[in-house]
Each structure stands twice: as C-alpha cells, then as structure tokens.
Length: 605
Image 1 (cartoon, rainbow, N blue to C red):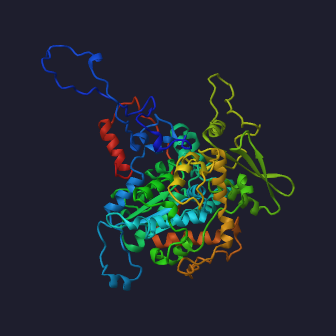
Image 2 (tube, one colour):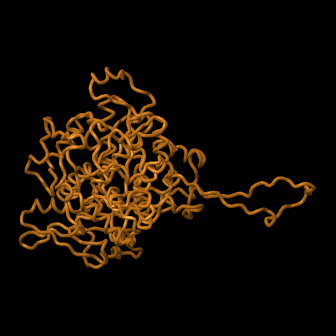
Image 3 (cartoon, rainbow, N blue to C red):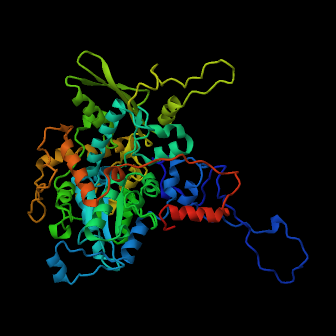
C-alpha cells in the first residue's frame, strides 16, 4: 500500500470504495447548437462526443467521513500537504524575526509582532535522512546537514522567495523518539502491573498512521489495545508549538511546523482532529490548529529544492553556523533538542532486533531485561522476515515477557484475526467460537504483552515517500557524483533498501569521529542548572543508552513551563470510524456535513 504508492502514481483515475460518499460523476459537456440544426431532434448518446474525464478529486475530509474506502493510500489524497504548500506558505508569510533578549529587541526595533509573520520550524526523521544519504553516497549525518542548509542556510530557501523566509529551527525527531520510547516502556509496565480502564493488557504500537487508519475503520475491537502515546512526529509538533507560543506570547497559529517523514500516511496523521491545539491549548471556542501543519517526504524535499533551482547534492555538508540557528527560547529545552546528536544505537548486524521504525519493541525488551537482572532475550522468526516473536527469559529459564513484531498488512491481518473477540454461537448451550490461533504456533492471543505494528513491509525505511531505486540514477545526474562520470549499475530494490538501512544505522559509528563544535567552532551548551533536570548521563537509570531520569526531568520541565498537564501533552485518543452510507442524513445535506467536518479537522480546506 503506502510502500508502493505515491502522488506520482495517481494519474487521472482513482477507484473509491463501493460505498464512497462522494461518487465521481462526469456529465457530458453541453455542445453548442449547430447551424441548420433541428431544435426538435433528439440527441442520442452515440452523437455526443466522448470527453476525457477530469482528474478525480477526493479530499481528506471525504475519506475521514466514512469507512467505505479502506486503504492507507488515503494519505496520498492530502493534496494540500506538498512541497508546493511549503513554498506558498513561505511566500505568503514573512519569517517572524523573534529576538532572544530584550536588548536585541530594542536594537532591532522589534517591539511589536508582525501580524502576518510566522515562526517556521521543521522536524526531520532519521529514515528520510537515510534515504537521502544512500541516494547521494553521503553519511546520514551529512545528509542531515544538507537538509538543514536547504531549510535554514543562506544557500537554501532563504536565497529566494518573496520574503526570503526560511526555517528558524530544524529538529531531529530522534530527540522526541527517546521520550516516546521511555513513555512506551512505562506504559507497558503499567499495563502489566495494573491495567487502566479501557486499556487491556496487550499493547499495540500506534505510531504508524496507516495501521491506525486500518484499525479505526475496520477493526474497532483493536482500539482498546492501542498505545495512547503520540508518535514522535506528533510529540515534536506539540512541544515546538506549545513552548514557542508560551515563550513568545503568540497564538499557536503563528508557529508553522513542517515535518519531513518517510511515509505518505504521516500526512493523514497530521490531519487528525485529536492532534491539534485543542488537546493542550484548551481554547475550544477558537479554531483548532494542527500540531503539524504540513508533512513532506524525502522525494518531495528534493522537489522543494528543485522548485527554487537549488541543487541539493551541492549544498554544504557541514553544520549551520550559529547565527543561522538562534538558541531555542528555553535553555534547558535548547540543550535537549540541540545538545548532542541522537541516533539509533546499534549495528547492521543487530538491525533484525532493533528494526528501522524507531526501536519501540527493542527498547521495551531492554527495559524488561533491566528489570530482571540475568535475563536474556530470545528471538524466534515467524513465517517471513516481517514477523518475529521475542521473549525475555530469566536466569531459571522461565519466560517472563513475550512480545512480537508484525510488519506489512498481510501479516497485520493475521494478527488482527487472532485478536478478534469470540463469536457467540447461535446454537443454545454451545461454546463460543474461539479466534484463529497464532500462525505458526499454538499460543493464545493473551501471550503477547507488546506488539510493534507497522504497515510497511521492512519498516519505516521502506515508506512510500522514500526515494526508490529507479529514481537514483536521475537524481544523481542532477548533482556531483563523487568525481566519477561512470554510470553506476543500480541495485535491485531489495538491495537498495539494504543500503538505506545501513545508512540508518550508520549514525552511531559516525559520532565517534565527530567533534562537538559547529562550523564556527562553538560548542553546544550542556544542560543548564534547572530544578528537577539533571544533566544527561549523570544518573544510573540508563536503559539502551537512554537516560530515563533525564527524559522524565525534561518532560516535567515541559509541563511546568507551558502550564499544561503532561498527560495532555504526550497522549492522544483513537475512535472507531463508522460508515453512515445508506443512513438517513441528519442535520443538513451531505455538502453541509462535509464542510462542517472540514472545519472540525483544523480548517484550511
């Protein structure tokens, strides 16, 4: 699904579900009357000239209105979230020049706030950087520097456009991923100790929007199992908008957040009504502002550069100078976001256990292992490479924790089938029908405590927005090919994904030879003395390289400076999407209902 579809794959026809609420109708064009034509002559179909049907347009609000179409490709239909929307927004709004100190404000004469200005911030996923790194034969770190140079540097977007606007901050989503991992491990442990109301013991990851869309529309019995945590994309957007709005005294709509993600389905996630300012800002009377305003993919990022006549492979492969990246308004959060590079700790050999989707399952297993000294982790591969069982076994040989990984919709369907509640038999006194057993095993559905679920086979590095093997040759011809003019034989797609995965895991080895300074020779600050926040790495509560105490301190600090409860900042909700096709319309016609839904989703379309 999302692993093979893109916006380029949609030409002039899409096939909505049978029960689509918005059927595409093409009426014959009225022909001008011919001279000497008989006004009483009946025109038959064979005399009407055939016309090519216009491109079908089904907006995101249409898809969210019912469950007639069940496909993760709905994200492709989010036409407003594209590189064109980024350029239009940059040209429509000047970059809000926010001073850091009052003396700077007075010196620059910036006592007021530009009503049309925006604070532009961006977040970039490690999978997108890995895709670009493999494309241009650079390291994952260098790819990150090139992205920052494009979005914030003098040779990037700021070199053109109506206002010369660019992005003030470019954040690595690996930072908030660590917060998600710590919170996920605690959520699992809490479910094991004392399941909360509405949360069953088994927890399924909820970071993949394609999987969430599928579950909400077709399998509502799955919803109690879903993790309530926001994804790294959503959590990053909430942190950036809530802190910047609070620190600078501006409304959330003044902060425009763009995310670079590997998957088109992330566009669908950004459009969810649950991921808006209403969840943390608390002003229901105002319009809901999305925590992530626009999502583009690695391929669309290159289209963004091409639209401004910028050669992406020719951009500097070094960090931005400090004067192009002002410090974040809160020193403690600034040190958290930019103090050191976060990366996936692991090697290519351990990729099978960590995965390329953020390492949720791996961290949960490592946390359980730390709670049981002397325990080991056992891995049993399923019927294919995208299914695996994991067990934490104590020193006596007893299995104390079981988890699994299911990637790809074919495997997900098997998992969902296992979790389907028992059907009541129509025969009096008969037993309930039990769900089908787990493929390849006789274990019951209650054995797992945690399952990492992703829609794309192979994980997030195989997302639909990633650069495909067929695009590499064309993209490399547009820039420098490492001094070689020989045309390289492109590998197969499977081998190409191996290269992307290698770049994804290469960041850990890159940091060993990286100086902490930037292009100016300045060194990033350490965590400042802040009540309740200890410096990273200064506690003994470290699991899989992540200082849990430090993460807890940062989250509490975030809650304190924004005045918002932590639960409202990091958790979200899910809902069953029921089709109303065939039901009587209540409260207005169909067009009014869709328009009202569009407003509820955050406006803009």
